Length: 245
Image (cartoon, rainbow, N blue to C red; front, side, top):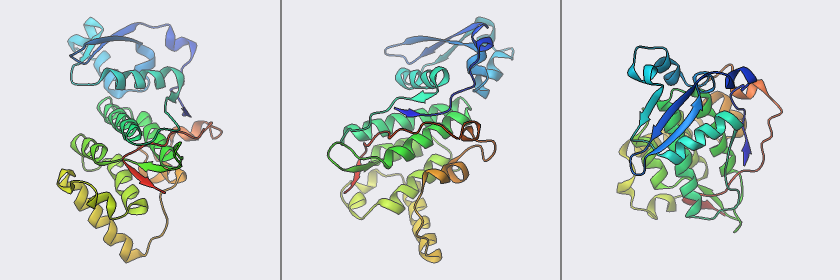
């Protein structure tokens, strides 16, 4: 499990009303969250509960197209300030976790929660720096790339991160070893541009945890990391579709 700054939960946040959240369709899962807690972090919920929407009156919101497990990760982070992860999984389990993180990022985008998106980027960055039980180092595979590119805008920081992963750590086998036609054309274009830019500038600096605050963060300032510089960053996970020995 990797430590991550939560959402400033204080006693008063738990004293307000509760919102019913219905997620998924088969199966349909009903969750509950304190209004003060989620509205303090999600601009989507803040707007929904302060408007004339029927959801505000019924104190209930449906997310039929979303994954209940992903929403539970979000709620876990809201209340506990951490994102549960494995730290020793080999592929393909590794890529399953990267995909779950990708879904969490997309949910954060839907809920307009920039801080949660920053935390997920943080977790991905730490995950790629860890070693699996077989000694390998794994990165997001094609399925993760497709999901991120299919569900985010061109300006997405998650897209930037995936491109940097491939540019800094990848090799030709990452593309030759897969059915490249399954990769989004937008990703391949971004990858080509990034390689040309790297060649022109002779850049040799690889993505680091520190760069999260500046390049991949939704909040240049203040960033969630600014609130607690002593955040416990335990070695997270090591799982994904691609491996570096």
